Amino acid sequence: MAFQAGGAADGRPASVRAGIALFLAALCAFATYDAFCKHMLATYSSPFMNLTRYVAVSAIALVWLARQAGHGMQWRLWRAPHRRLLLARSVALACVATAFMTALTIMPLAEATAIYFTSPLIMVALSPWLLGERVGPMQWSAVIAGFAGMLLIVRPGGDLPWAGTVLMAIAAVCYAFFQLLTRRLSGLVAAPVQYAYMALVCLVITGTPAFLALPSPWPDWPQLLLLLAGGACSGLAQLLLLAAFRRAQASILAPLNYIQLMLAVLISAFWFDRPPDMLAMAGIALIMGSGAWLALRRARPAGVGSASGNNSTAR
Image (cartoon, rainbow, N blue to C red; front, side, top):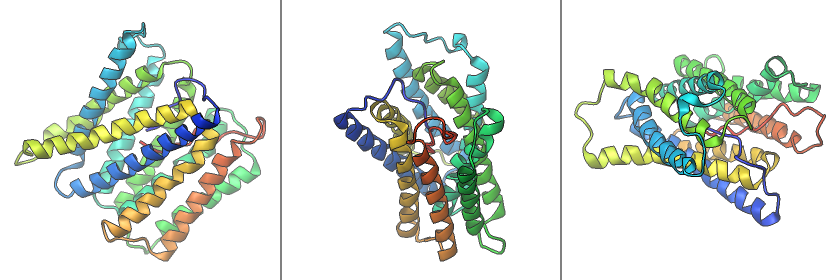
C-alpha cells in the first residue's frame, strides 16, 4: 500500500540515495511478505491471514498516530476531514487485500504479482475520466502493451485458474481506484491519519470473515507471533515507503517498483519451484517495460501528461 509522502522530497544527493535505499528495502519487505503469505496459506485461510496482518498494521498505525497527536495532530479519526474519501479509499484497499490474498491461495506467485502490477496501467487508463488528466498517444500505447502482456500470462488454454485470475484482476482495478483516491487526498489529510484510517477499516472488513472460520487447532504462540510478525513486516514496509518519498521524488522511485515483480519471479522459481513459462515471462517483461516507461515519463517537464502519478504498487 503506497501513500503520498508527508512532505516535499529533500532532493539533495545524499537524501536521494537514502530514499532509494529505503524504497528498495520496502520492496524487498513486500516481496518477502507476499512469499510468506503464499507459504502460510497452505495452512491458514486467507481471511485469517488478513486478520493477523491488519492487527499488526493497526497496532503500528495507532502508535504512530499517538506519537503525532503529542505534536498537536488531530487523532480522532471520526473527526478527520474528507471522511467519505478516506472511507472509500480504505474500502478499496480492503477489496484489494481480500481479492489478492484469496487469489494467492490458488495462483502462482509470479503470475499473480504480474497481473497485480497492471494497476498503474489501469490508473492511467482511468485518469482522463476520474481526474480529468490528459493521456497522450504514447501513454495509451504503453497501456495497451501492458495489457497485451497480461493476456500472454492469462492466455486462453493456459493452466492458470480463472477464478484466481479474475480475483487478481479485481485487486488490480481496486488498487488503481485506491491510488487515484490517494492522489485526491494528497495534501488534504495527514499521512498518519490516512494510514490509521486505512488500517482500522481494513481490519474490520478483511478480518470479520475470519471469525466465521477460525483455524482449528488454534495456532500455538510461536506460530501466532510469526503470523503477527509477518503482518508487522508489511506495515513497516509501508512506513519505509513514506520515508523514501520524503527523501526522493516519485519520478526517481516509481521506475524501481518493478524490482518487486522481478523478486516475485525469482521467489516463485526458487522457493516454490514454479517458474513462469516463456510466454508468461514475455508478458511479465511487457508489463514491466510499459509500467517503467510510464513512470519515467513523470520525470519530464509538466504539461506533457502526468497521469501515471505515484505508481507504487506495494500494498
